[in-house]
Length: 123
Image 1 (cartoon, rainbow, N blue to C red):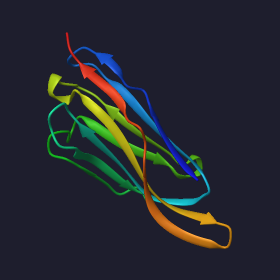
Image 2 (image 1 turned 60 degrees about the vertical axis):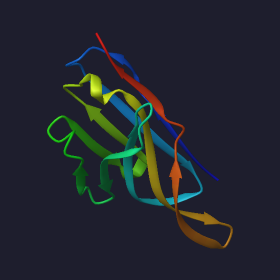
Image 3 (image 1 turned 45 degrees about the vertical axis):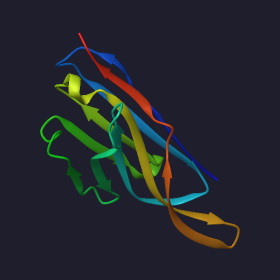
C-alpha cells in the first residue's frame, strides 16, 4: 500500500557532502512526520533527525550543525543534506514516514520504512 524508497547514498571522502532523498508513495493522504535513522555494522539503529509536516525539526547531537533535514509535503518526499561528513557517519541510512493512509473507506496512521541506502565516508 505504501512504498518508501531512499536514494542518494554512496562513497564520499571525509569532509564531503551527500544528499539523501526519501520518496513515499501509495495510498497516502498526508505525512505527519519523517525521520532518518542510521545503523552502522555491529551497532543498533539510531535516530539521526526528524521533521514534522509544519517544518519543526530535531537532530541528534552527533549531527547538529552538519546535517539538515527537510520535507516537501506536496511530493511526500524528504531529504537529508549531509555536510562535513566523517568516517563515523558510515552506515546504512533509513527513512521512516509516519503517514495517514486510506484503504477503501477506512483511514489509519502507521510507520513505513524504506530499505535503506548505504553511506560510506572514507579516503
